[in-house]
Length: 258
Image 1 (cartoon, one colour):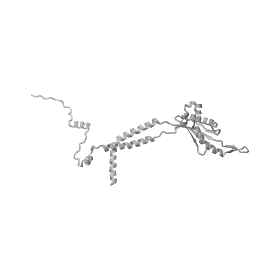
Image 2 (cartoon, helix red, strand yellow):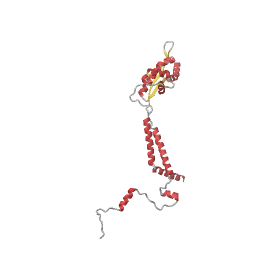
Image 3 (cartoon, helix red, strand yellow):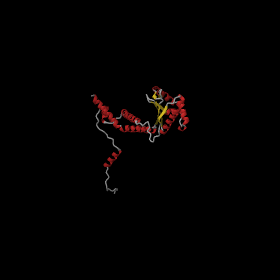
Image 4 (cartoon, one colour):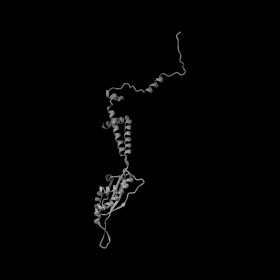
């Protein structure tokens, strides 16, 4: 019994949706296309360039002059990476970058906002990263910051244990790190579809006009004796022509009283 009631309700909902399908389709298309255009116009590709450095003062000499690894220095170098990460993103370094590389046309605050420094856990390696809407600018920034950091850190901490493993190079076809996502377009499609169906059901629920024999029978509990169909103007004219056919070849004439 319950299943039959659910089936009837589902059929009624389906009828309402199909009745106003054009409204739902138009609403979904407008919403989805609008979001797609907005997403395309506001998409800003971001490019990334990076340099890798090593904190490498780990070799010592024994009593007879042979080089050996100083494991104590390794631990100290790894611990220094956290300090280096903070020093790089300070005016002590960035102000020098602005002074030495005026062609970048960036302030110290702007450099701090686009530069990031990461350490690779458990190693003596660290990476300086720059992100910008232009890959060329990102590469120039990261190389400039790396150069200034390497020359200034001995003056700040009185140590000279930084070596550059690789520098950012210019690429012909760099790929942005933020790929354009269709997530918002998909979300817009689903949301507009749900809203469109909801609006269709709402319009049907507030429409209290009687449109069929079933509606009359449910409201008045009376049988329908006759149905007057709606005639379109074209159908009316066509029927009128059939009732008054023109006689081909008949000539008009007049009569007089004698």
